[in-house]
Image 1 (tube, one colour):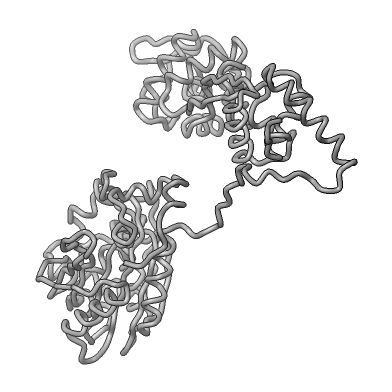
Image 2 (image 1 turned 180 degrees about the vertical axis):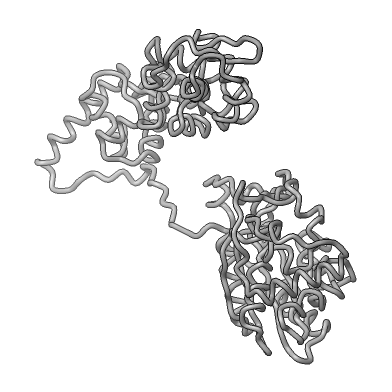
Length: 485
């Protein structure tokens, strides 16, 4: 007699009913077990020789970003032929067709090539001649994209011959098709398994005659993982609780800001390298009238022209960006409320066009705060930071002078991490420059500070690569100790 867990029995009965190979998803559906239970039970049965396992690798495909665009706006070569047809179809200037299609250079060149290969057009002396009308929905490529858009993932080995030809053509186009390779596991009862099946059936028959069910105290128990917050959310909640406990009030704002609030209001010149595409994510081809009082806009522009000695452009200030810091939220709060006394903070995602590495992300969480008061000084700001770090469990803090574009004087803070045995750089801070506060109508000192929360999470949980915080590896998330620094 072999001791069997209830999970194993349910799997054996399901396999016996099918009398053939079954996938893990199918087993889950027939037994009512979740996938973790099915996988665990299959491992037990494999160890006991009750099942045979067949593993294979399959390729799945789905529609990519450019494929979705082609579904909405048609394939580039179809758009090209349609545009040329509308313009007469005979001897249409290639330049005019290019303008009418609104395609990027690489898309337009590819469209010309595909249309010529299919015999839809010919070219002569820089002119396009349409030779065949096009029905996009009859094209195998379009039909395959439509299926992928509707069904999601499809198995490559289940595609028809027409679909396979269309798949090969779409695969050669960047971002039309997304592929992934997965391992497929199928199981079937072994000869030994069928003998165990008889044992299970006999045990079920005996249940009615027995008053006490036999309990196997050595059987493996299922592992239960309690639900919990993500470790980064724990840090965000802890920082929020500390600041509210210190008397700060939280504010919030949009992740999409105008360049005026993100840069100009902070006295960042319009030709500063940080405003270029390599540092900032701009919303393509979108502008919005500056959402600020006209007098504020005029004072900010005047401060730029006097301080930086150039002609300030309102059109540049109207560009929309993914905010590069949460200071865009607090500076707008100052302009709209003009408080005599205030202690506020904001927490949110910010975006930088950074190359991803073990210590840099393209988007991360930042906490940033300001204090407005008549007689506040840099020493007060240092005291606020020391108290904030103390409540996080970091008692050794030091500061040194540094440079930030919109604060003067400016400081950088470092904390000593006992487990690492070294000093670690954390938040930057300073007092807003008069060029920042005066155009907003603020005549009192404004203390400002801020930094990334992912770095605190890395220190708190002993993580060496910031990308681990977003990997969603369950083994890491379940294994991290819930402890203070």
